[in-house]
Length: 287
Figure 1 (cartoon, rainbow, N blue to C red):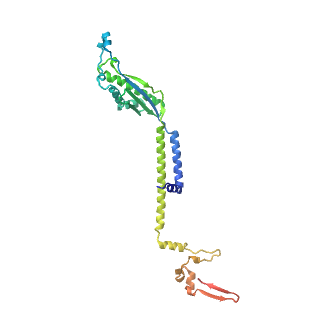
Figure 2 (figure 1 turned 30 degrees about the vertical axis):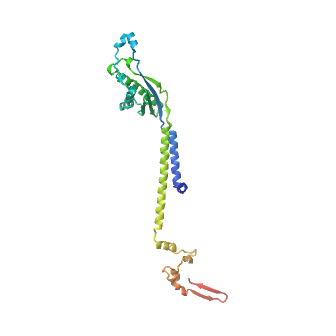
Figure 3 (figure 1 turned 90 degrees about the horizontal axis):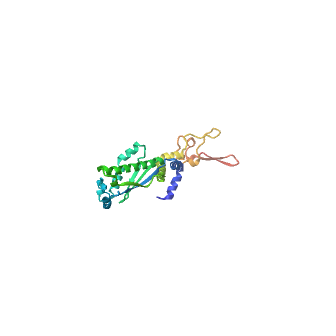
């Protein structure tokens, strides 16, 4: 596609293109300035291993032997299993339902870096306070789930994993990407609408051109020879005849009934007569 040809086409239909571009620009300014904003809050938690009594501590304090140490996650060969389970429970649909009942945002994510004891929680909302409150609620749910999955066999708290907040959700930051996505959508829609309107206008022009080209040749000659069906009159009220440049040989040799001048004076061979008044010759032409 030739860029110069595109520009020429757009300029040819400027009375259609310019209003569409103006509306698109106003919509883009409104979306970027006044459209709803999106704020995101984040928090990071670390899962801390329990402090299991050593042999020396058990010998020194025999009462530790009587504590219930039946924590199923202590028997796992993968020490990060507890973090995987907690992350899975937070991503469950019941978590979203609980947040919805509390009037919090349901747009949240729970991620866990591979082979680590870290859990990253983030939540987005149109309000800063709502985003921060959602992350705090998810943090409280994380701690409750962490305790529930380990104490199913009544294990003593000394043998339980605990959570430690690494990064607190003190503030929510605006996500400019949301406004940028809305702006891109508006601009793309404006461009599509512009080219669509130009395409329709070009189609209408082509249709009119084909209609004019398809008109009968005889009708075009008739229109060019006799543009008016009635005789024009001069200022004195006398009918005037068309100029000689509008006549053809057929009009002269075989005049139409409407051509009263030629019908009254005969064919072209009888049209030239002359006489003199004694001073200067005067030629009368009935053509």
